[in-house]
Image (tube, rainbow, N blue to C red; front, side):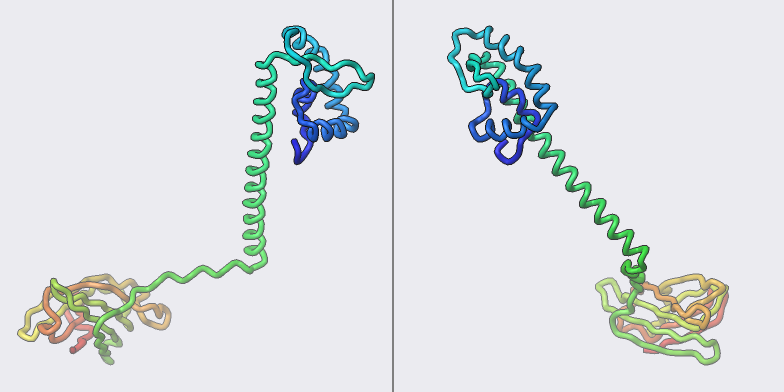
Length: 240
């Protein structure tokens, strides 16, 4: 109790268990605390009864009394031990409550700051979603008659070639696919997709179509790529 006076020390004071510094601090507190004075009065009879249970025990320091009366005999050791354990338990509970209360206050404060920033329009703007990047060796082409333009990015792999496609200037509804054409005329489908009505890479929908695919052809075997309609026709040819 050296850091602060605690109401739960009434029992320890009544039994004479407080150290000198704690006892003096509690007596100063007692003069202005009606609840502690009332509790001490109720405990006085109990302390006397406990003392009678252990008449052989020697006297121990006890609380000073207004009339300068004699000191009470020591209560049984079990009672003293119980009071000491209770004091320690009460103090641990207070420290735990203080820590929990402080953490809750900090959380509430942080929430308040976040809400206030959002209300004031100072919240950080959300990051735009990351778009797929076309990597590797790039080749570009455009078709003035269809309005389509596109770029392929090629990366050599052990299984063939990874192909990235960025396509613009097309409107739907369409179903298309990308073909890789080898130097000897072999064709393989790299990827397929559907074009919605609003299209890709057009004035009212400027975002291009970006997708990834692959072919078993090696980079050296590929001659060109074709963006073809599923029902026939070519929108764009990209030579290498």
